[in-house]
Image (tube, rainbow, N blue to C red; front, side, top):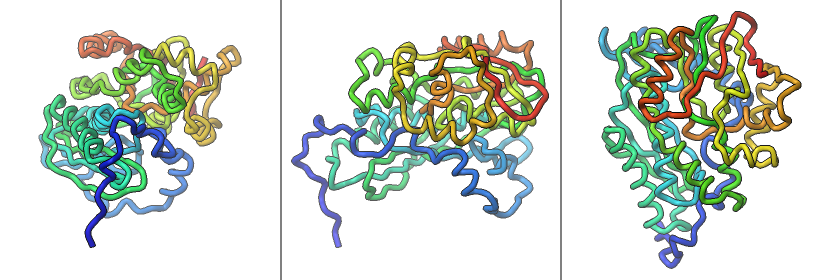
Length: 357
């Protein structure tokens, strides 16, 4: 039986991708607590001696040692539209997927596309523009987009499986931070808030420009940070929000974190919208998953919790480094175009938790 043709009569310009889904971007992730319960007791397969990073630490990518000088880094990431423009959706999804390789301190070299589209709803031109946006980012990253897989799906889905290379000694995990480390965040927070505002028709042109600027900025600096011995741990902040991904570092490393709320870089539009209660439903799901491991100062604004749990799509790198290396790390970020990168706190001995003041 042949598949029905897409609805050619539909005007591509009239389609709002965000109205075709129940969620978007990294806010589509399964809630952290639900995911932990679902994975509890699931076997990781054969414990291969060359598997340097697997599923045990909830890290950004898997790492397999090829030899003493090379390790293979593999990841996949895909989601439903966070914006309405097809090309922008493709660009954001590809940037987000490639970030997982950079977050390991590795160099991406190859990608495969993951595509699920409602072919009876979306014109071929819209689907083509999504894929073109992803291919554009792969070219920017200097990696080959070598094919992929597609299905007919009730909601549009796009992303990449990405392969990278690194030296085994240069791999940056999320469970190797040390007491006394400083925390550096590479991109501003608030992407989830802006995406929710867009879906509700409340985001202006300036806010959309902010959203696009942050979500399409490749975290290329991660590859350079892989060469820093003073960088002890690294991850990227995505669907679980800053608190969720910082807690992964704390749990894996057996440490507590202290975050200075006023030091956090935040998108200017998010500073206006977050106090109004605008944001995705994933904010509440995130807090319900890990709020008992967080201590918020009574002096914080009422909306601070929402911003800290806001799911980021294609968010910034979160780096744990020796305190004496902070200046050099920030210089590296700023030289790569991450002008809002800043030190946001410290790690210390103690039960895994995050304290925000």
